[in-house]
Image (cartoon, rainbow, N blue to C red; front, side, top):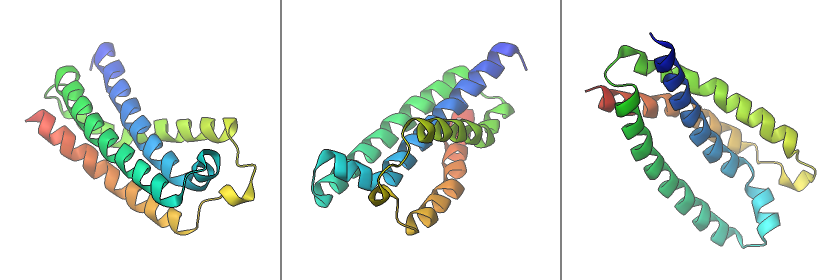
Amino acid sequence: MTMSFFLKLNIVSLLYGWIFFICMTLQLNYYRLLRLTGWTADNLDLFLLIVQLVGLSVATIFIYKLTVTWLGHRRWIYATMILWLPYTVIFTMVFTYLFPISDRGDMPVPVQGLILLVMLWGYPLYIAIISLAART
């Protein structure tokens, strides 16, 4: 594995981590967004749904094309299924350091943890599907 391929692999993994981080942050900061925007819950729900669906579809197309052109048909492409997680953790740590929750009303509800666990288990499957499609 060459150094340029290793760098490209990590950039693609960083983008996977960034996509997951954005999706997770929008969900966990629901009450903060509700308070800061002043919108009704229905308007914010619709806005977040549109942002996440459009963002996920655009990101999927972009990541697929980037994976095909940069990583090609190598087996190392599947390493992105693991390498996205450290980048997500780093993004989360930086975000929580820069924007701590100062209002107790902004805390996410406990069921959000279960939703996040399902997302954590399903996201490597999403990456595997993109990697498998890019490798063929």
